Image (cartoon, rainbow, N blue to C red; front, side, top):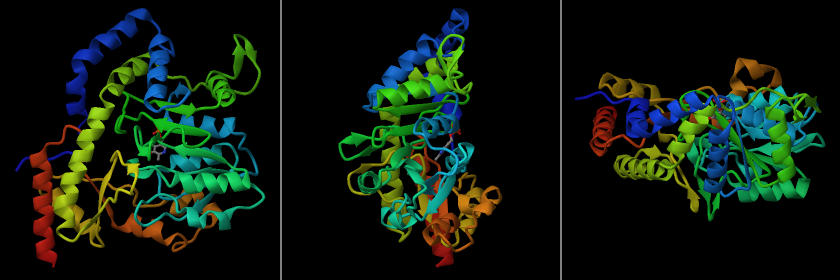
Length: 370
Ligand SMILES: *Cc1c(COP(=O)(O)O)cnc(C)c1O
């Protein structure tokens, strides 16, 4: 049996190599190394693809979150309601602006923040809600926006894992006041290095983010506010502009693999990623859940099949956030997912017979432990 990677960046690269290499060389000879026309063109196409007015390219998803929070006016002594079942960057960005992350448990099925638990966490200091479209599925934004409107809160989407995901007829990226995307290489749309994007339909917020990413300059030499060096590289803009044209195709391939996995694994009685009605899931991660998760992972590894964990230690139990005082057991659904979730290989270039091979190994393991 051949081994199967969790992620195959080489396969994706080979599929676009003939377009990417000349585009990179063009940027090198043009010397537009920072921002420049390729980044501007990518911003326009990304905005169009996500049905938003403005897209501002930055140097990472974390920077995108940081600037979105700053532009929204979140700062010291504010509280931001978010999920703990996420990558640490979500909560780190909240801490960067001096605010306090307030963790709310997730819904068991979608693994996204449970809106019915949000209102009890709102205090006079609450300024924003930062839902995470975890694993590529939109959070319950309609319910979240209703709460935000009632309490006059800003909504910022963490869409780092959810390029092209939809909620009903609407794309992520325009479901709150601001959204942050990541182009880390392993994301559904990945750079050859670091990259990120802020999207918004608000022109004033867009201008603010644009200034903040470039040293707070209103015009050259005029630093009106304390800004950052968070600009996107020209080479990344050129590469991402090419890859964006394939995003829908790649998403459809991921969704087909998800259907294949689900058909096989659910028939074994296993719980997998669940696609909520009217939420178009883009499967950054496809999950299978099992209380003997570590044993299943070892069985797959023994057959050369790599897997991942997203995420085994929730943010509220990380040492760097221990001072926030969330004990073990405080977010039961989050902790249950952390203990049982396993990420199976998922990328457009994965082959149907590889999905079949993975499911066969899981089926055999299930028959042994039954
Ligand atoms: C990847 C990721 C980030 C951070 O993006 P970077 O580009 O790595 O800085 C933030 N939030 C979530 C949910 C992510 O998956």
